[in-house]
Every structure is written in structure tokens, then in C-alpha cells.
Length: 225
View 1 (cartoon, helix red, strand yellow):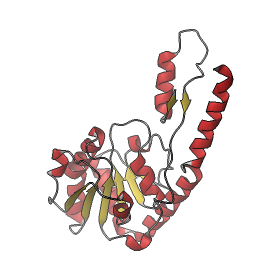
View 2: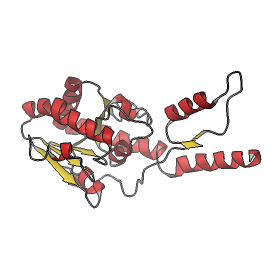
View 3: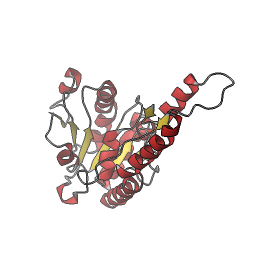
View 4: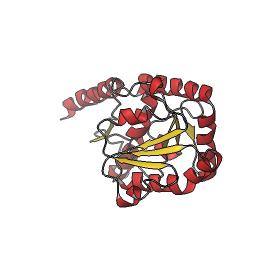
């Protein structure tokens, strides 16, 4: 059994282990990575005061995150930076997400050919997920493109990007808005964080690393089969 989240692996292992028995050895952590060739830095495409959230917009945790950010966080950002623009990028947006389009500097794109083209526009990317499991592709993709990112601790849980270096973390609306505004206002900070984010992804989250680990797990399982 292969799981992409370490927390999920621990939960399944605990649930399936018989009381008094040793650790089970047929549940492995096998995370995916990100295509660092497709999702690579494009600093020339960045647009000032542009915030992007990407993901499948029918997925319930993304819908909840988008609505929470738009209703609780974004008005605070716009109050201080009225020229700011927020793009919700992803296929099949739920009706509640579609309803945000055109409000308060918000654009809902719907399905796009290549999300990397839209992430490239971002001065700041956000991952305001508040309930999820596994790994957050949207966070890996933004970091691979050397974007300054503000995320919730839950969004970063499976990736473990270094806080304050490769990502800013915030849980509540006011700190989240303050982090977004700080990055929008400071190009040098955005570049430092983006460079650190890209370096972190190249070191930890390319496809090759997780696949090599998964291959080793398969090879180790063969003698037990």
C-alpha cells in the first residue's frame, strides 16, 4: 500500500496494526514530485500586485479555501492595496467560486491550457487550504516557479518547506493578509523567498527523488511477496 502523505501512512499503519504485534511493513510513503521543467521560473512574466491561487476548483477543500480567502483575507489586502488583483485558476470551478468572478478585483479563470502560464503572472501565490491530506500540488508548482508563497500550516504539512525561508505560514485571516501584503510590497523579499523555494523543490521534490525511493520500497517488498 503506497500513500503520498506521511501523516496518512502513520494513520493507516496504526489502524491496521494488531495490538501487541510489531510494526507492519507493507505500507510505504511514496510521494509524487513536480515537473521542474514545466514549472520553472519566469521572472519576466510577473505582474505587480497580482495574487494567484491555483488548483482544481471543484475539489471541496479548494472551494472552501478559495471562499475563505476571498471573503476573510482578500478584503484586508485590498483595503491596503486597492490596485491588487486576485486570480483563481483551475478547472471546473464550483458555482460558489464562479460567483466571485468580477468582485473586488477577483478573476475566476475556469479551465486553462497551462496553469504555469498563470502562476508566472503572480507576484504572490497563496495556498489557503484549511483541510486536506497528502501533498498539495499547487504549493509545489508555485514554489518550483520561484514564487513567494503564503500558505496555511495544513497546506505545508506534507511538503515541510522551511517556514520564513521558502514559505510564509499563517492560519488566521489577519496574519495571512499581512503576509500577502508584506510580500506584495517587497520585491527583494519576494525574490529571496522565491529563490529559496525553487532550491528547496530542486533538492527535495523533483520526480526523480520520490520515484527512486518508491522503487527501493518495491524491491524490498519482492522477497516478502
